[in-house]
Length: 81
Image 1 (cartoon, rainbow, N blue to C red):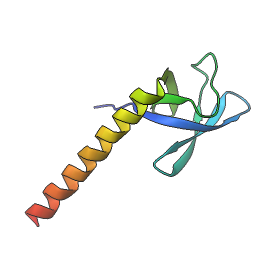
Image 2: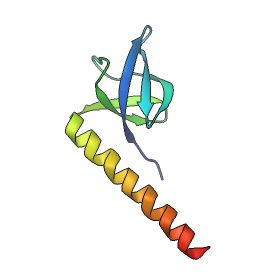
Image 3: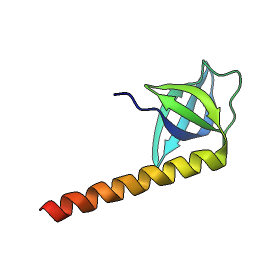
Image 4: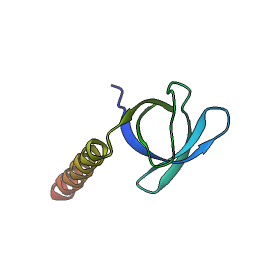
């Protein structure tokens, strides 16, 4: 199964690269598949490539759902321990 996740661009680099932030983790990715990208944009990230831009509100809602899922999983594992 593959998963694409929303991330925020914090810095645009030369050679169609950018630095993104996901919950405090920063990583360099390729933005070669996009026409343009700016710091502050939200993009969908899959295996190191930005596939498209996202509306900021939609990106934040999706990230909140991922956070709820992680909390649910942690609570479930603690209940089993």
